[in-house]
Image (cartoon, rainbow, N blue to C red):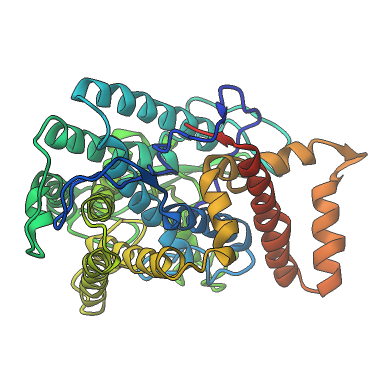
Length: 485
């Protein structure tokens, strides 16, 4: 994920100390499995709950990947976001988030008694996600390295990770609420497609969003556009020549055009990954100085979590909610895995075919259809693999650290992925801001020991961030303390 702006304080957070949590925490958390839910093969049973450990482990994996690619991606560009078409490890993080959000919605809303109560749960959570997104990624804080805060409202970034999650969550959850709450209990027949027809409105909503995205992407006319860059205290003005439709390159695509028109060019992300393209730098795929003959758009802003691409992302949440529906309706491991694995491999293959036939390239920045299918398929396969290892075969101990992080994922997201804890530590320095505990550990415990900045950075992220927060999350879990949204 793009390294985001941090937050200098945690006012407004809500910590819960309890043995039974509100498991609908969106980014982030899921409900317990209800053993009394109706299935295809058996009548309702006596109510009891059994937590599916895979849900927490998968969510924890997503947070771990985010921390890894955010903080080690600068050293190893091969795991950082793909500069344009293609995929790397970092490009799986956002769709994995949206996948587990969909699973969470299916599990959480099945116990809500009416639509009014559902709206009272969905709307505040959406607003909280938007609030935290603006605070963490809008530019207010410059954590963890710069010890300052404040943002010029003329340049605040309106979009971001949590804002995209908020949009997908709101749309998918509202469709789920209005089409399932108050209906008679859904009893599935033995057909493989019965679960799709039972929840057809969810699929109609997801595909409608993708149709809107595709039509806009290929039919919208993209005119020439201009931007300005401050260089040596002088404002330089550039014009990008477009005048095209259906272009999928960095400069003239409809995704960027929509964001420039809706938000304004001053409110977009200023460090797009396309600067690592060969057209922009000889150091590609690493960061490096721009070529003398680099096109002007290499300097331009672009919003990777923009409006049109977030509309496309709704389908990622829809596929996730399908996995949640399978979890609710099927109790046998074989039944669940048959549905999940088939769906996962199907989506994965479709994405691969679309990409390698050059019909629709896999592109995270545009959130293309092939990207949705490929990453959703990967999420489904990984989720199924975790389910086999953890919940079927019982190999839970090796994945406990992921479970702990997944149970307190909002805390780890803010403190580690957004750099808030490191910023707090950096605020205590001796004579020079570079003389802080964080910098000392990075330099003397990792980089100097291994005589490699790249390897030292990677090991620092693994041990001083991921392992550290896994231990903290484990302790908080033992104490029954969780941060819910």
